[in-house]
Image 1 (cartoon, rainbow, N blue to C red):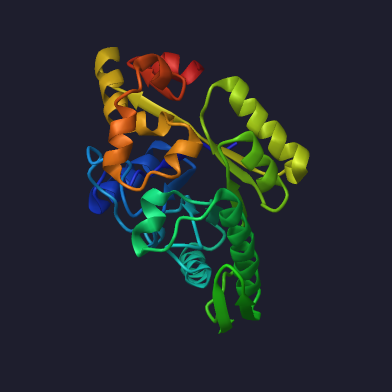
Image 2: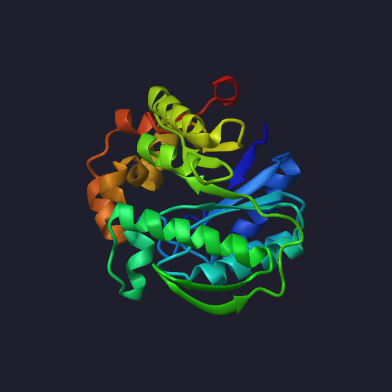
Length: 281
């Protein structure tokens, strides 16, 4: 088992986040993960640095395993994501993994492209994963489909095979991810829901493959302060996936998140002022 630190670009400026990553490594965390966002979830979070640039800077300064959750098909072409990941692997050999997701309109609609249905995004993601793997293997790739690629070959390839995980938060998505991905990444949810997600992934081909859960913790000197911080920063992540994926502005998330109460939030975020209780949970 690995215990990792989530580098939240939405909350911290890039230089400050580098310092936090170093502190996490010194504290004994095994790994680090970040999300490839253009916007923060809400304006209150206030930041959203370029995760690839930032990860390159960190890779040269630490020995942590580095993970990236990204959507390689709308805002970004999969060939460019493959190149970025390969470069990162050369800076941190054997310490890099990617998790591919179908994305949110919050980040992907900025280029003006139409927001596709879930089914169309899943098909595009399958094509992207195939193209990325072929580029990493040194093939010269042509592709026509959800995106175009003409006679592309990656010259600075990964030194080791890069795991391609799939991101899923629902049972249906986890079942789909199990059919093609090298592993699963999901988020903390009420335990019965999380169990169904894991079981669906394993039943569809994921048995024995690595799984990662992003668990959110809001810790402060008092329970009241921890809860207030969680409500301000992470209420938007309690929204149902089918609603959240279609919102394209932080202000829309803020409006929906304003209806989230403390009871709902606590099902998704561990709120605590007691480290011992947190450790034993």
